[in-house]
Length: 59
Image (tube, rainbow, N blue to C red; front, side):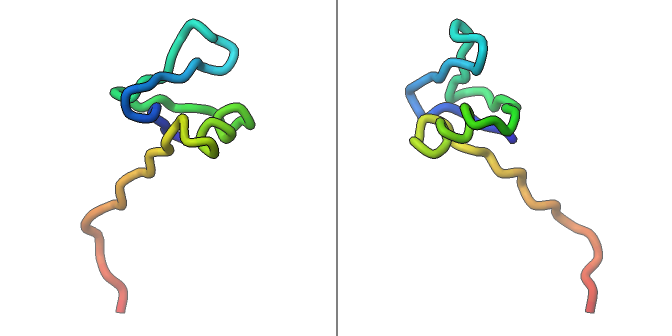
């Protein structure tokens, strides 16, 4: 899952407390309880992939 920190903040990475997730660059985070907890408390925001455009429609 891709995440970014809340605007104006940064969050330490799991297992690397001196490396940070920022609000400017998306980070590919593993699906662990650490990152899920940061998402739940609002420190991180999950970035959803954009829906695919185009393609054929079925009737």
